[in-house]
Structure formats: C-alpha cells, structure tokens
Image 1 (cartoon, one colour):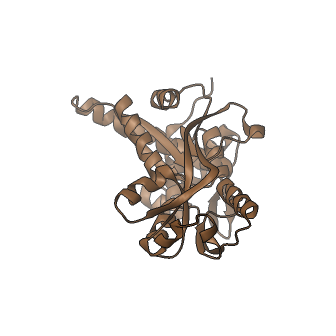
Image 2 (tube, rainbow, N blue to C red):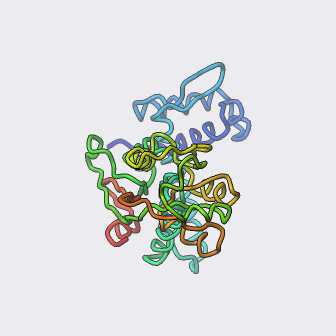
Image 3 (tube, rainbow, N blue to C red):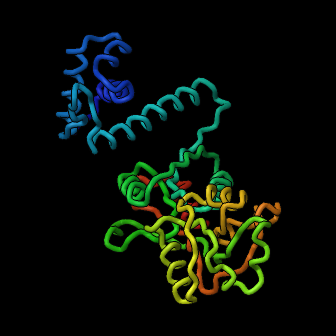
Length: 291
C-alpha cells in the first residue's frame, strides 16, 4: 500500500507558498539540498512533476496546482482537528467551496450560503473565475459546487450534473435620467447607450438577436460580465442595463434603478452544477438536492 509522506507534503506547500526553494529553506531552517531532495521524493511518489523550472523560478504544473489545493485542505483540517481536541466546546464545521461566475447575481450566491448554513454548521468559501476554470476545478474536486448561468456543456458532462435553480425575466434598468424611455418601449431604446454582458455570454447573444428582430440599433458603451458593476454603471447614469429581474429587485426597491420594460421572451437561467466523487461533501450533496 502506498503512503503519502506528510512531511514532504508540508515542505512542498511551503515551497509553493514562498515561491522558491531558497526562501522555503530559510523559513523552515533547512538546507536547500535537503529540501530539494524531499521535494524530489514527493514528486517520485506521486509520479508527476509538481514544478516547472523557469528563469530560476518555480512554476506550479497542473499536477502541482491540484496537489497544493489538497495540501492546503489537509493542513487546514489538521489545524481544525487540534482546535476540536484541545477545546471540546468547538463544533466541527464542514468546509464547503462554491465556485461562482461573476455574471451570476450575488443575491443567488447569498441564498446558497444562507441555505448551506441552514443545513448544518459549515464554513463556506466563495471562489470566482471563468466557466472553464471553475468546471475544471469542480471535476478535480477543488470546489464542491459551481453556480453558473448555463448548464455544464454536454461533451464535458461525464460525472457532472446540472440542475436549474432559477429562471428570471430580463428587464431594462436605468437611472431616473432615462425614465422617459418607458413610453413606447422597446422602440424608445433606439440609439441609446447600453451596458451589456461580454460577447461570450448567452444573454449577450440573446439580446443581440432580440434587437435585430425588433430592428433596434443600440450604442454599446461598456461590456462587463460582473452584474454588480453593471448595476453600478446603470445607477450612475452611464446607460441602460439589461438585468434578470431577480438581480435588479433590490436596487429598484431602493429607487437606485427603475424598470423601463421587459424584454419579452428573454430569460436568465441559473444552474447549480456538481460532480460525482467517492467521498461526497454532505453539505454540497444536500444543497444540490434541496436548493
């Protein structure tokens, strides 16, 4: 049976964190040759190089990135174990990691976190990134769940499961400056400045098709996937922002934005995505089933 040497794993973690063997050796008070030998033994036991040597520096390989994620979790759990044993009043918390696209409303992420805490005591980490990055992290078990505005691509769905958790109408939002555009909507949008999602977004594609079908030409002044920035730009009079109703409700209630009208036939879908694994995170499992 193959065993993992946790001393070697710890040395690897320090090297990765410090960025070089020299700095790690200084921190650990070990000789550089000794530390290099320990790292080599870990790489040999794993059967993969963990670093690439570039310009006298160390760059994590893909295997190294995976190993560092697990190393961080191993030693986090070790510290938690000490705290639980040394203080029996401390309750063990399950650690849940959720990857979220920045195009997903922060209200949805908030509801996921609240639901996770309602299921059981847990600590939650929210990570943002691109869809491809987060899906890869999910499949490599770096994160437990992913929230996106599209399901996982079919060709990548081996052991990956998608569940729609929200379907929201798309409305045109703006500051009070543009309230006159409510009249004769959507034709009133002709030539007006817009803050839109970036080109790779499904919503962007749907909006372009909508305007084309209505023969409406708009002026795209800003593109961003981050709904928080979209809302902020809209609030500060930079243009009209198409938003899911769910993402706009709070700012409309606070009178920071107004609803100019609904884009008939356009919807934003929010999906929760999980990946099969031998040891399931119990909070992630219940969250996927019940949210």
